[in-house]
Image: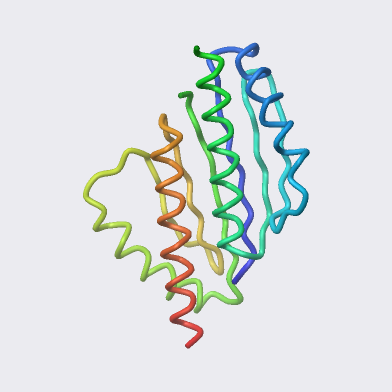
Length: 80
Length: 80
């Protein structure tokens, strides 16, 4: 497979929500022991920004799925 | 869920491979009857570029999965 680069930007209603979601997912991000895709996970005001580079399409799909799922779960908890 | 924007850039070994893969996936892209994520699918030399905007994290995951899977299958066929 070929080189894949990308970025995903998620805008939250406000900085507080973004920060809470970011910190929850950061915990997961830091505990992933092994990663086949290179990924930066950062917070910028009310936005979470994910930048990635991968050589392997399947690994990248798995990685994107995990991050979007973690973000969703974290956001659902802030809305409880 | 909040607004999600992103782009994914896939670089192929050469323009010919990129074009063949692009055209195969373009067919799928055009036949998707209904889409919950807004998505642009374009070719730029030896790169395929996907830009998207979505309100729904789950729909977006499904969409990204489909495109990356179609690209993978198309690329595997060109390598036969």
